[in-house]
Image (cartoon, rainbow, N blue to C red; front, side):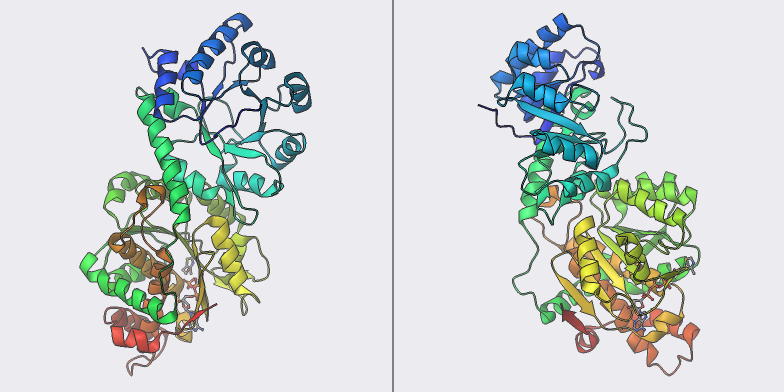
Length: 524
Ligand SMILES: Nc1ncnc2c1ncn2[C@@H]1O[C@H](COP(=O)(O)OP(=O)(O)OP(=O)(O)O)[C@@H](O)[C@H]1O
Ligand SMILES: Cc1ncsc1CCO
C-alpha cells in the first residue's frame, strides 16, 4: 500500500548545514519530536555505500516516529532501504522511469519550476510536486529561478482541480515568511491550497531543531485554523457597517496610533496633517535604516509608490517585511503603477516580498495590478468612467492577493473577496486637488491600526495582522469623504486650495450624527 503522507512540515535534510557539534541523527530526531511530518534525505556528493547507510539510519529514526522518508534522486537507494518513495528533480531520472522502477506503491515527488513542468508531473502520475524556488536559498543556486508567491500561485492555478496531486513549496521558507507564503500561495477558484512547506536551513541549521519544527508546525496549524474563522459579524447590513466605521473613527484619538508612511514628495505634508487631524500621529520614514527600530512601535505602515526611487524601494521591501513579521497592517498604494514599466516591476517586486493588508488605488492602478487594460492611465490619474463591472475587478484582485482591495473614484468599491460594498460619498473637488487618493491611503492606514489595536482576535497566530480590515478600509474612506462633503459646503471654500484646508479641518471634527446621516454605503 502506498504510504499516506502529511506534507505539512516537510524537512529536506542537509548535513552540511548542521551547526558545529550537532550530530545529524540527533538533529533529525529532535526535529521529528518537534513536528516534522515527512523527511526527504538529500545527499548530493555521498558515495552509494555510505548513502545507503545514512538512509537506513535515517529511516530507522523516522520509523520510530511513524514519519515517512523519501530519498532525493536515488531510486536505487530508496529500493535498497524500502522507504516510502523518492523525490526527483528535473535533471534526475524521468518520472516515467522512476515509476517503472518503483511501481505504483511508492510515492514519487517531482520538482516543478514552472507551469509546464508541473502539468507534466501531474499528467505523468506524480504524487506531489515541489514548487520552487519561492525565495532565494543557501542550499542551491536558484538565481533566475526565484518565482515569489505569485509564481507559485500560478502553478497551483494551472493544475487540474480534479487531480489528486499534492503540492508543497520550497526555497527560502522560514517561520519569518511562512504566513506570507501560505497566504499568498493558494487558488481560491480551484480550491487548491498548499499541502505543505519544505524547509531546510531553519530546522537543520538550528541548535534547537525541536523548537524550530514545532514553531513551523504551530504556524501552519494556526493558519489553517484561522482560514476557517471569518470575521462575518452576525449582522452584515449597512447600519452595522456604519456603526462599526464610527466605532473605529471615534477610537482614533484614544488609541493615538503611530502611522508610518513612505509617502511621495508631492503629498507627504497633507498626509501627515491628515493623520494628525484624524487623531493619530504621523512619521514619514523611508530609509532602510529606520525600519527595524521603528516597526515594533507603529500602528500601521503605508507604502505609497508616488515618487518611488531605487533607494526608497529598498526601504519599502524591508519595511513591508518587518510589518508582516510584526503583524502590523500594511497598506499599499501603487500610485501610477500602469504608467511605466519601472513602476510595474517595482509593484510586482514589492508584492513578491510581502503581503499587503489593503491595496488602495484608482481604477487605472487597480486595473494595472490586475493585468486589465479596460481603464487607461494618464500619469497618476485614471482616465474615463472606470470599469463596466467594478465589483468583479475588486473581488478578483482581493481573492488573488488575499487582502482588502479599495478602488477609488466617484464611487468607491471595497472588497475582501467575499463581501463587497460601494461607497457613494465624496465630492468632485477631491478630483481637483492632488493627493486625495494618497490621503485616503493615510485614513485607511489609520483606521486599520485602530482596528488592529481594538479587535479581539482569537486566532492571531495564524494571521498576518489582527483586526477586520474590511471594516477599517470602509471607515477610512467614509471619514475622508464625509469630511470632504462637509468642507465643500463651507462658505470659506472658494476653490480647490481653500477646499484642501477645509477638508483637513473637517477631518478633525467628524461626529457620529454626520457620519450616520451622510454615509451612502451599498452592499453589492
Ligand atoms: N467626482 C468625485 N465625486 C466624489 N468623490 C470623488 C470624486 N473623485 C474622487 N473622489 C474621491 O476622492 C478620493 C481619491 O480618489 P481618486 O480616485 O481621485 O484618487 P487618486 O486618483 O489616487 O488621487 P491622487 O492620485 O490625486 O492621490 C476617493 O475617496 C474618491 O472617492
Ligand atoms: C502628482 C503626483 N506625482 C507623483 S505622486 C503625485 C501625487 C498624487 O498621486
